[in-house]
Image (cartoon, rainbow, N blue to C red; front, top):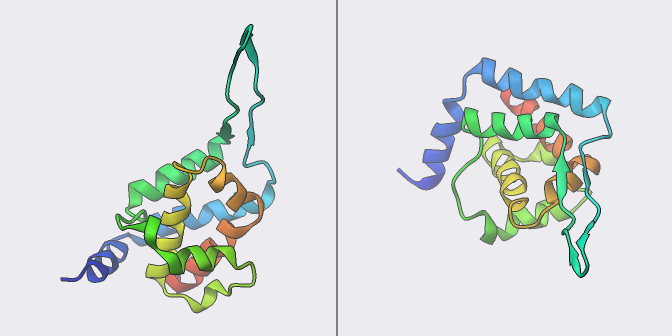
Length: 143
């Protein structure tokens, strides 16, 4: 069994109720423009400062947790997936042309990349990219 076949099997194992729970987040995401914020640097002592970091809202952290729990986050070499990075960097990309596997890989890339590029996930919510991908995935899954 190829890695791609393994991922297709993993995605196919997600129950309809879990997909519905995932797609229910879309409405919440569309109702808000608050997905998180950057903290400010604070001086703790002379010459000692905190480093700013990204704080995600409970809604976003709950969504990420749900993605892991249902098995949507795939274990692949997302760091070297050039095609995926190109898709995410093109604002005119039509995600409806992609299959379920590719859409799940894009979500995985966004979630995983945030661990190494803090604030990336926040920016993908603020610019609407994550919601676009989720809507396209919903149209593929809920047919």
